[in-house]
Image (spheres, helix red, strand yellow):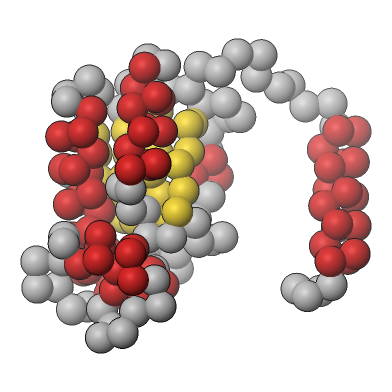
Length: 165
């Protein structure tokens, strides 16, 4: 199914039909309570992880939860919406962090941004922790204290969130 576009579209159409048939209560305004900078890994779903309702989270995603120029701009926008916190949510078994630990990474720009925060960590999960903390510090500097910034690590095997700051 991964490489069959027709089956993918069919699955999503069927899913949307079930969603629509359930007559969901949809947010009528854009008023999130928090922003989350997290990885694009499909296992990491902040809305499910935090049992949030639709519209409660402003989610910014990229490989390795990197505080790129675009991510920082999005988080600054979220801060302007009146959110109460920004969470930098790294995760265990992160492919982008593992890639950054390699001599010749496949994602060189992300690897460079991740390596800045590693502080000698060579274990992938400890590296993910160090990167989440370093990224949270970078985000906090960029938004100049407008909202609190927290770092956390999501454990993909258990579903638990470990708060790092």
